[in-house]
Amino acid sequence: MAIDHALQRLEAHLQEMGERVLSALRGAIRALEERDVGLADEVIAFDDEIDRYFLAIEHEIQSLLALQTPVARDLRLLLAMLHVNLLLERSGDGCVTVAKLSQLVAGVEPDPALVDVLSEMGERAEAMLRTALDSFAERDLAAAESLVELDELIDRANRRFVERLVDVMADPALREWGLRMVVAARTLERVGDRAVDIGEQTAYLLTAEFREFTDASHPAG
Image (cartoon, rainbow, N blue to C red):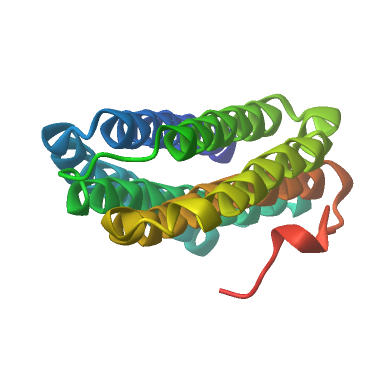
């Protein structure tokens, strides 16, 4: 059927977008680690491509909803993809935020311990997004639910960041850097939260019921 082909194409585009967000996340973390202003510029510019995917996917979904009469299963998939599309776009925006923050303090010699924690958070956020995308593609409920435990790991890393930050902020030369990195850490934590949200969309697809895996993954804002 025509709608089946359209849905397959849409889902392929969504996964392609996800790969680009993962690439942006890796670039943003590397730019932060290496204080590479040029790489940060590339991450910021690359967001235009992610936005193009977002708009194209949104348009395709809206067209299918308007022109086709999807059955319940297909309608669930379209609605889930609409949510995942937005979550990926916001994750891409988060990569831009990290890249811009790294540029603002590129001239400051950072605290190595805090950079290590940020690197860990970036790796965990990337792993979570990968798990979320794979669980959606493979309709794997167990993998989707495993994101709750992975989210706790990134939250623990963020708590370690805050504990170390108290000492770092005592150094006037590092205060601006520390304040910028607080936002970077929070941004990476939110990427993890969005991965959990994608997992919830997988569960919705498979069970036809929406449920939040954990209230902690859904702060205001």
